[in-house]
Image (tube, rainbow, N blue to C red; front, side, top):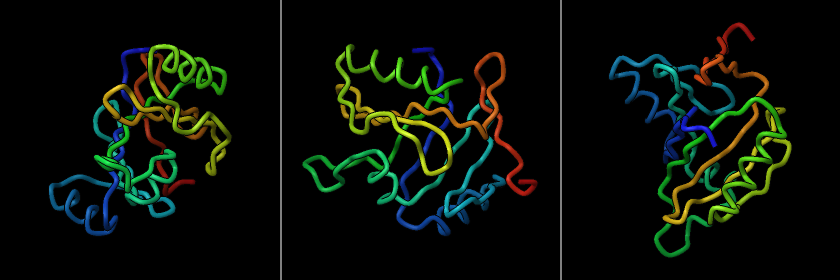
Length: 144
């Protein structure tokens, strides 16, 4: 697994309220299907409904300790790389919470938790560009 974080997704109770907060700090976001994306240097900060994020990651939000409402994500260049990274994580001691599969946005992704319960998504999203150095560049959602 490359030492790289592509997206930080915050599970929030109210996406509109959270967007208003971040935009009040001067951030500029783009909303797509109830999810807000902010370009933050070479990575993206994403606001998504907490329940949707937990469900998408195969996490039981009611379990002891609960879901922390944050998922780290690494975008990779192919579905095969998603499989390879998730397999390597499982061999290293991760718990796969959602095996890799085709996503609602036309990509391919899987989730795992590290030994401390931190949630990771490994995703291939054909709509997001990865630079040669692996940094993520969000598309202009308004132009799509």
